[in-house]
Amino acid sequence: MGQTAIYGLSTVIIRLFPFIIAPFVTERFGPSALAPFIDFYSVAGIIIVLLSHGMETTFFRFAEKVEDSKKLISTATLSVVTASLIFVIFSYLFRTDLAIAFKTPDQVNLLILIVTVLGLDGLSTMPFVILRKTGRPKKFAIIKIINGIVNFLLVIFFIVLLPKLGNTGFLGFKYNPDFGIGYVFVANLVASAVTFILLFQELKSVSLKAFDWSLWKNMMAYSWPITVAGLAGVVNETMDRQFLKYLLPDGTNTEQMAIYGAVCRIVTFITLFRQAYLLGIEPFFFSHAKNENSGHSYARLMDMFVLVNCIFLLALCVNLDWIAPLYLRNSDYNVGIAIVPIVLIAAVFLGIYLNMSVWYKLSDKTIFGAYLSVLGAAVTIGINVYFIPVYGFWASAWATFFSYFTMMTVSYFLGQYFYPVPYNMKKLIGYLSLSILFSVVSYYVLDGNLLIGNALFLLFLAIVIYVEKDTLRKIRKV
Image 1 (cartoon, rainbow, N blue to C red):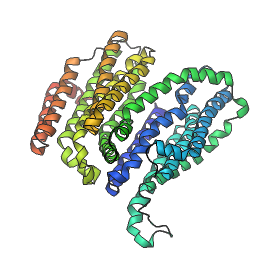
Image 2: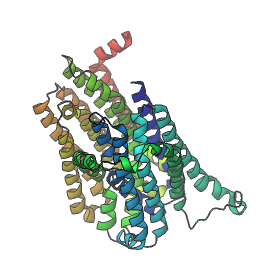
Image 3: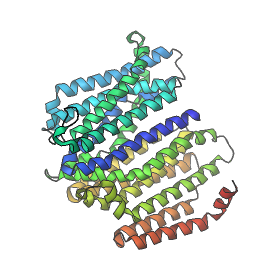
Image 4: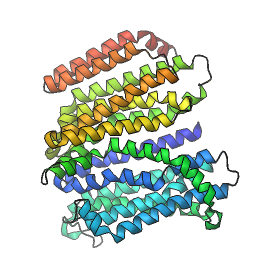
């Protein structure tokens, strides 16, 4: 549990850094200037999944079977290292062709930067796994946090402080407006390089002679479904940016892509809570699985999880008209704020789905996790392809909504069949429906009226306090 806390804290902190950096980036760069960053990084997730190809999870699974740890470490690590090196070499050799295919013929330099970043991150994948396997959570957390700090400080230096220094610069280094968003890429590259250097020592235990071809084939047979599920998950999260780029006319496509990518950062208010909750609650799920009343415990946890998410959702939606501009710091992005309530609701659905995943994890039917991810990806692709040419980023927002709603709903019915949990559906649907209704009415019907919106929020809290009075009474006693 102590190790889980360290891993969890470092993961949440790492996810917090991009959220903090985003306002500085959007303040400095408008949608057109930001577009390359949103563009390249929307594909980065796909590349990372392919480079790691499920070897992290597969390594821990095979660690229970393979006694020769050096053989296991070498086989898994060399697999990821080889994939990373092939990717970097191939991308560099065909950089011009890739840039043209990617519809960014004038961004070859940025393409090389992101390729190098992804290559370094790929090379760092297994060293992090080795740290976990050898029980060194503090080093794991420190390196992760150093990565975030270096990236954050360099972004602030490059795009906030350096421009203010003007022609004097810093030690002869001056801000170049033409390079613009490239500075954010450079900051990420330096952070990834520092991380790899700090992890390099872990690669000393890797030996080419210890690579086992037969073991590798068995590991790949186990890892490919994990890779498919990972790819489907990334499609649901970020690939809608690519659909916007390729399905909208040139001239408006990259701007819509950048606006959509920027405003979706606001959802981090909800996803950070979800990430922290899931990291802490998964050990509880497994440790209580054999308890006679485990199902009731899971159901009660779902009540509280949904309730907190509903409070976050409503609080954000009724105050979105001042929170979003304050966060984005650039009026050029304000046109996209209207889709945020839809994406926030979708994030709540995703959180419920992930919380519900206890059924296939405890019943050893994890393949259903892949099935559900692919189902969600199919919904995402279908809605984006069909509706983006007409509705632009609104289609992407609704695609996210319906994708996660579908995954949540189908997972519930499958879970009740394979591993029934007595969820209080009347209460859950009541909280969800009321918070969504108040959010929609406040933002879309009342045009973001702060006074009435916050009155609705207080009304929702009053209802919650009344319904949960017994639970609150127990908490006071504790």
